[in-house]
Amino acid sequence: MIYAPDYYPHFRCIAADCRHSCCIGWEIDIDADTRAAYAAVGGEIGEKLTCAIDDSGDAPHFRLTPDERCPFLRRDGLCELILTLGEDSLCQICADHPRFRSFWSGRTELGLGLCCEAAGALILSRSEPMRLIPIEDDGDDTPPDDDERVLLTLRDELLAIAGDTSLPLDGRFDAILARAGSRLPERTMADWRQTYLTLERLDPAWDDALAALNNCTPHPGWDEPFARLLEYFLYRHLPAALDDGRTAERAAFAVLSVHVIRTLFAAGEPTMARLVELARMYSSEIEYDEDNVEALLGKLT
Image 1: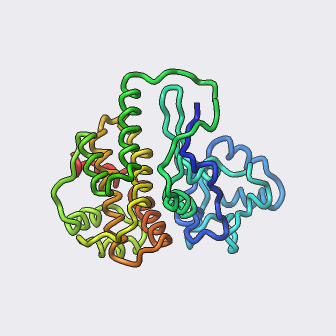
Image 2 (image 1 turned 120 degrees about the vertical axis):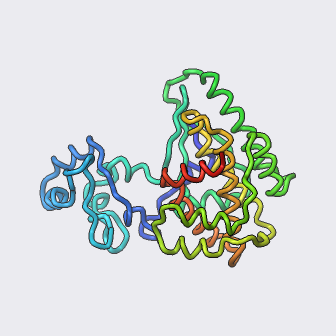
């Protein structure tokens, strides 16, 4: 069975209206099936594909332009491949983004990554807690094994705490950490700022944002958007504990991530657009860099 958050079916790429295109600044690998299909394309677009693809590395990928744009990203923000060959012509990574998957026995979970501003706006503007819904029966009814059953049960409990409106957000943090057998080190936000500054960073704007990471009073009335953020991190990152056994650390990572974003948010104007942008930067800089996630997990052991 394939599951996804209840907001998942409502996601739509905003294409030319996107301020932070996923077609800029990211290496775009091409899967084998799509590479073979591109090799069979003729005409002018086929010639451009031949010139635009680098096959010399471990995996074929598009040669980015000097300003790090996909060679098929037009100046109006639209994709030349889609306009010329249709959406089915996209390589797997382009077709999937910003979706992610978690795999269990007999169960696949889909989600939307916060590095996409359209996904962030969809997730963070919701007033109701996230619910998982079945979206497709793939015919696999393999029951979860014992480890999966334990982790699924724990995650359900943590998600229920995250969505518990009878608790203030800090109370939800504490309850989640206690239930997961975890904790956050006794460090100030200035200490965490120094930690985050040692991580790999992509965008100078993230350095500017981190400069504001100091202890300050959160804006009132914003618990629920941050609860949605907490649900997102728990849903996305706890399944990886099946591989590394770091359930407590991953729960703490979820809490720390929301705590950091909330503190950055408190340092400026309280608008949804600003929250979506901070979440997008955090996701791009931290979540999508496995080394950065690993470094933070090491601080939470």
